Image 1 (tube, rainbow, N blue to C red):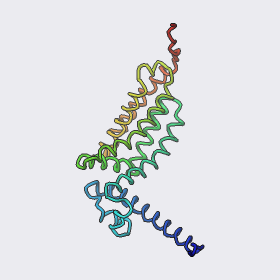
Image 2 (cartoon, helix red, strand yellow; image 1 turned 135 degrees about the vertical axis):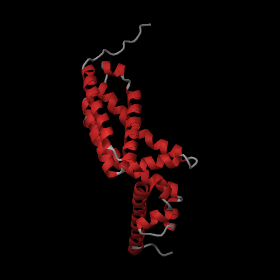
Image 3 (tube, helix red, strand yellow; image 1 turned 90 degrees about the vertical axis):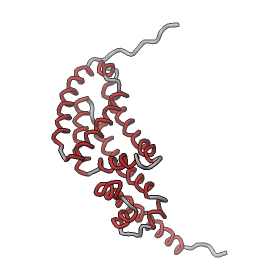
Image 4 (spheres, rainbow, N blue to C red; image 1 turned 180 degrees about the horizontal axis):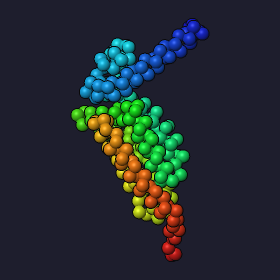
Length: 221
């Protein structure tokens, strides 16, 4: 039986590279379609046209349009997660955390990242099972927000006033809500004003964060 030689190996590698390029083009096409035409307009034909390939390849590589759209959401989330983590890990106070959130907010609106998530959340209402898939992809953001708040507040009095888990949930919900409103009406001023108020509140929380409370002592048996 003849063994596969260098030519066969090169051929396999070439096909894999081409397949990866097609998948990447389809994912980018899906991202653009969600941003510009919305969930309803992100059809296999629309995405394939943007990717410059046959719409049959959508189903060949991803199985369904919805699975491709989820892959697009995953790609956007991966890109933003690195930026979010870098910014939040450098925040050493509540004020710095609020300022990082404000900068990320503006970057997301400029790049249109929030539109991808908003469209997927909107589409989830009309597609059985899609809502659960989208919700699962929001959990890493809640976890990231929780770690940032917990690290910033520590065992301070502010942590008693504003429990990190609740603060993280409110942070993600408020962030998405502000981005949704700003993307719908194109008015950033109102949202940025909210961030300005949040900055004032953050400075007050920094004062409380400076008051460290002792760890709870264990009861003697």
